[in-house]
Length: 277
Picture 1 (cartoon, rainbow, N blue to C red):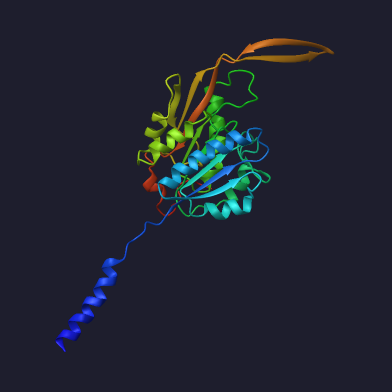
Picture 2: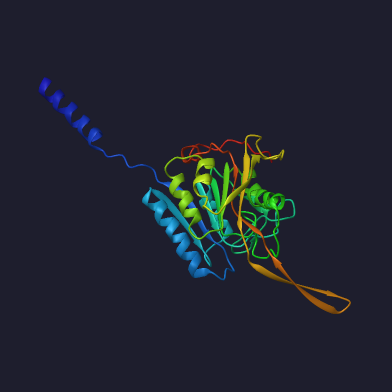
């Protein structure tokens, strides 16, 4: 009888100890917006990012134009710790300036803040989106640091109100990829921002965000780089047109807004409300 009991115990223990546990994949949403004239370039950039994430056990939800329906994106974002958008910026922000995205339709900042639900505390990344890091393709002059901060706030705010804990934007080709390499090593948002800076960039502002809708611990940072591109500005007065050459002295292409101590591990925790609706 004792031998039968001993054998039973052995068979009960062996399957439990021999099971291999597979880590639950982290999730990321990668979006290429609609109406882009850089489709091939956008695809190469986003696929490089997606490959990096998949190598780190991320389940990547791809929404590449024309398969970028907003309703499907919202469902995929529920359990995502990363929300990455490469596409047009719009003037559909909550405060009337920059904000919102362009997918299967124009999605305003208000629709994002009220319609997007995050179960976790994700980081949102904008890749080469006008206004996302400050500058826009339509700028014919140096917009200045204050306007750059306003645009970054407008782009980030809808996602922060939806529950995101951080926002990062980079307009350089592989800038977001360089940032993510740091992020995946569990470095915090502030450090990853600093480490993604190029030698020719200068941090023009790094300060607390003064907005009652956002947690008081959140900071905003914007950087500038020399821009000697010449723009031709044409004006018409009383039917007479004149042109003027303008040198855009600086552009603003890397920014962050959010909890500076935010890390990848913290984005995987269950959501808690820190942004005021």
